[in-house]
Every structure is written in C-alpha cells, then in structure tokens.
Amino acid sequence: MPHSRRRFLKMTGGTAALAALGLPGSVLAQGAEAGQLILAYPTDVPTWDPNARSLAPVQSLYKCVFDQPLTQAPDLAVEPALVTEYSFSDDGLSLDLTFRDDVLFHDGSKMTAEDFRYTFYERPQQPVPEGGRRLDTAFLWRKVTDIAVTSPTTCTMTFSEPMPSAVTWLYFLCSYVVPKAYLEKVGLEEFQRAPVGTGPYKVVEYQQGSRIELEAFADYWNGKPAIDRVTIEIVRDPTARVAAIESRRAGAAIDVPVREADRLGQMPGLVSTIDPIADIVLLQITKNGGFKDDAVRLAAHYAINKEAINRAFFLGNATPIDAPAARGTPGYPEDFELGYSEEKAIDLLASVGYGPANPVEITFFTTNGVFPNDYDMARAIAAMWQKVGINAKVEAVEASTYQERLRAGTLPEATMYQWGNATGDPVMYAGYLLDPNSIFAAMKSEDLGEMIHPLLVEMDADKRHAGYRAVNKFAVEHGYTIGIVQAVKTIVHEERVHVTKYDNGWILPATWSIG
Image 1 (cartoon, rainbow, N blue to C red):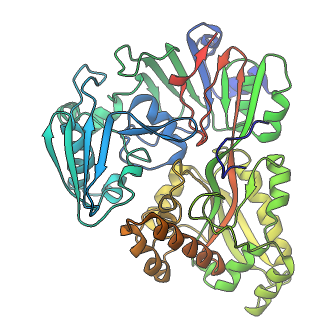
Image 2 (cartoon, rainbow, N blue to C red):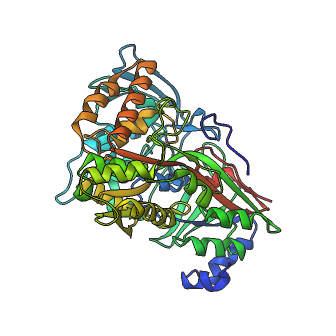
C-alpha cells in the first residue's frame, strides 16, 4: 500500500445491507450518474454550527460547506485560503491578518474582516443561554482580547499573553468563518437548519443521522468543484459501508475495516488505499474508580501488545506509539519507549492487591465504526488486560457522547479515541490532551499543568518542543495517558472516481473528480 511522504508517518451484504439502513433506491441510483457522487461516510456532524464542537472526525464535512482562514496542502504544507498574509508582532501579543476581497457566502453576501471578528471574538464572548454550553471556540480563543478591524480586508488580533499556536489554530478544529449578518438575522436555530458558509458546496438537504446533500457553489472563490453534486450517506456500520462500495451503490466508502479495504482493492473496478496519517489512537485515562492508582494505570499500559494490534487490525500499516503524538513530530520523545511486558503488568497490579484471580473492575468506552476496527481493537485490549488482572467492561458510545461525558467530567477509567491533529504541533497533542485546564483533557492532574502552562506562551519553538517531549515522557511514566498507534485512513472508491489524498486524512470531494 502507498505510504505518506511525511517523515513521521511511516462478505458482502449488498443491497440487503443498504436497504436495512433505509437508503432509498432513487438516491442510491445517483451513484451511477456523471457529475454526482455518493460517499458512504461513518460520522454525522453534531451540529451545523462549525464553531461549536471540535470533533476531528467531522472536520471534512465542515470543510465542504465552510472555509478556514488558512488551510493545508495534501502534504500538510500551510496554504492561504481566506487569509492571504499574516504576521506576529515581536512579542507575540498581536497577529496581523489580510483577507481575500473576492469571497462570497452562499447567500451572495461578501465576506469581510467583520465576519472574522464576529466568528473569533464576538460569538465566543456571547452569554450562554440557561442550560446551554459555550462554543468550543470560547476555550480555544480564550486569550483573544480584541480583534480590531482596520479595513474590509485587514484586522489585528490581540492576545492577553503570547499565543504561539494562534496561526496553527487558524487551520485546525472549529476555525470556520461564519456570516455575521445572516446568523444575526435568522438566529442560531435557523442557521443550523440552513447553514451558510463560503465553502465549495452548499447544503441543499439534510436528514440528521442519515444524509447530507451538497451542491457545488458556482461562485466559490477557488473555482467551482468538478463534482456538481455530492450525497454523503451517514453509514455508521462498517459492514454496511463495505456493502455500499462493493455493490457500487456508493462511489466511495470511508474508513472501512483494513482487511476489507485490502480485499476490495483486489476487485476489478475498485481502488483502495491504506495510508498512515497524523491522527493518533490513544486511551483517554482518568483517575476514576479502578484507575485511581498509578500502578494500575501503568500496568494497563504494559499489558497492551501494540505490535500484535498493528498486525491483527492494520496489516502492519500503523505505527505503534507510547506518547500522545505521532512519531517524528517535534513533541514525540523518540529516545523513550515503555515497551510491552505482561510480567511488569502483573507485578504492578500485585503491588496494590490485584491479579488474575482478583481483578480490578473498570469500564472501557470506545466508538464503533468511527475509525477502522475501533470496537474490535477495544475488545482485543480488554482481552489483554484480562490476562493480567484487569476486567474491563467494553461499552460502545457515539463520538458525541464521548464529547459530552468528557466536558461533564464523567468519563470512565478508559476511553479509546482517535485524536485528530492535522498540524503535528505538540500543543495540539499533549498541550490539549493533558493540560488539566483543557476541555479536551480527561486526565486532570496538576503536576501536568505545572509543566504545560509555561509552554503555552513559549515563543521559542525549540524550547517549546523540548518541553513537550519532557511532558510526554512524564505522562506515560505515570500512567496518565496510553498511546496505541498512529491511525490509518482507508478509502475504497470506484476507478472512475479520482481521489486527492491528504496526509491528515481529510476527505474533500471538492478536490476530487469523476471520469
């Protein structure tokens, strides 16, 4: 299988399975028509407010409809988008931005710097309705003290303290510009029903949990997409995604099981890729219940045979990791390795009174079908744990449920999750996964905060990266986090569909073609 150029990334159910999902034949028939594409996709958006929730698996869906200030090339080089130029002040307390002057929203109105200010400053500052939740951007951009608009195409962001990650966040999660005038006119509820962005496609129909109908935006600033109409079928069951592409009821299927991708790629008329990407699969760990003791958490890490997981579930295409970062990125401690040892796991558990005859009981959350083999991999890890004295009850949850439980601080001892980091910057790995003040951190430990907080304002890149390597090593040694593997992205598509692959796993139909 082809591999990424990035240096750090090393049974058919047929029509019956699709009918069971309620996919209408009239819609499925579009897959054979020129200029139209059906995608079998594993995850729906939690909301059409793209600033609300930072779920990595749905970023590709948002990028169909909305634009970010900056973007990335397939090899992840940073590229201009709505923003054409940017520069930090010497002290890191301000950031000057220049915008394109030819960008239209889907309603025909022009995008200006006022829309940027509204998105990144005004909306995050707005009061939260009773019983509601703040936008994720309120946390991500909490250091922004103002955005001064100096013209329709220029503005200056100012920060309460240096924010070296500000530029990176302009092409990462939740950073999508929304139209101030339209949103204020119709209100949030109507905006979520009929979203308006500046992206390459317009939403023409949406059935929650079922289907997203997209139509190419003729006035898109970067040129109208080659594919006129895209139907994204939300197919959570990986077996049904396999059936959709094998029966040619879909032109492409995303995140199918690796072995199925390998099999389907050998069939006439189909192409499959299994590529390593920047995302990581890790266990989000808490100090709750059976994992309140360092020894138990560390034993859980020693007990996982990651090479066996790589061979069994990824055909050797994934890269095992210990720390919450991709190997070769600036924050990964390459000179450190925890290793696999059932003996060490058993000894650690025995030191606190547990073992195979007297196992510690925990709950283990996992998604099912969000990324390849997630649920089966969780069951395999649970079996490894059982051998040493950890009895894990595996429960499948929706990605949105994970987010809600994470924010509420009610996650169980362990949760398997695929964390997206298109950037490779260590602050987007450990800086948000391990900082006890972060809304993304399951592990709330102040000793981690003491190490991480100075790094959040460190403008010297070398010092910052060295600091994160130390954080990652410390966190692994104390059982605060358990890295499993760098993720892979599987795409199976018809030969007639020409796919642009991104090293971060983005699925962007606007960059594809048919013919």
